[in-house]
Length: 108
Image (cartoon, rainbow, N blue to C red):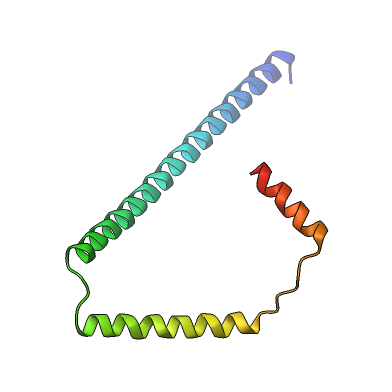
C-alpha cells in the first residue's frame, strides 16, 4: 500500500466515523426531544385534570352520603396512620444531632 492510498483510506474512514457520530448525536437529540415532549404532555394532562376536578369539587360541596363516605374514609386513614405510627420506634435525638440538624436548616 502506498502512502497516498493509505492517506485516502484513512481520510475516508475518518469521514465515515465523523458522519456516524453526527447521526448518533442527532438521533439522541431527537429521542430526548420526543421524551421531553411526552413528559410535558403527561404533566399538562395531569395538572389540567387535577385543576378541573378541584374546581368541580369547590363549586359543589360534599353533601349527604358523600359526606358520610368522606368521614368514614378519613377515620380509616387516621386509624391506619396511628397504627403505623405506633409500630415505629422513635429514638430521642442527642444534643449533637440537634445542632447538626439546625445547621443544615440554616444552610438550606
